[in-house]
Amino acid sequence: MPLRNQVIAKLARTAVLFATLSVCAVGHSGEEQMTRYGCYSCHRVAEKLIGPAFRDVAARYKSRQDAAEYLFQKVRAGGEGVWGDVPMIPNTVEKIPDEELRTLLAWIRSL
Image 1 (cartoon, rainbow, N blue to C red):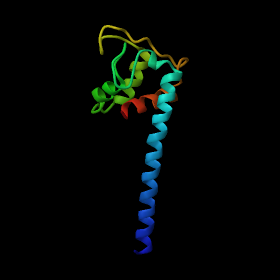
Image 2: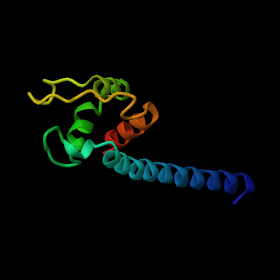
Image 3: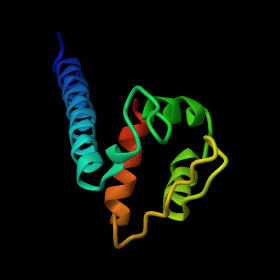
Image 4: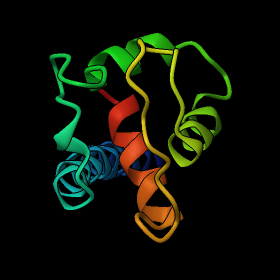
């Protein structure tokens, strides 16, 4: 195999490795954040508790172009009526920093 092809193949393998590690890191971090910030008090990954299952949230917003920002604003503002009558309390930046919330929402959307 020519040197150029070897380099391209090695770069491709490296890219796949980093992508895999990134997905794993987001998943692990998301699980920890769900516990740290109390999300599991009302939500579960695969079943409805008080609020919707995270897999249901991911499925509902899968094709929405602005899902990341939409969900960010919904979690910040709270509200009711989207998933039933039980309101979700607002989650302020004092409760969960912006960067952590975005990571957590990326994990939910990856389900």
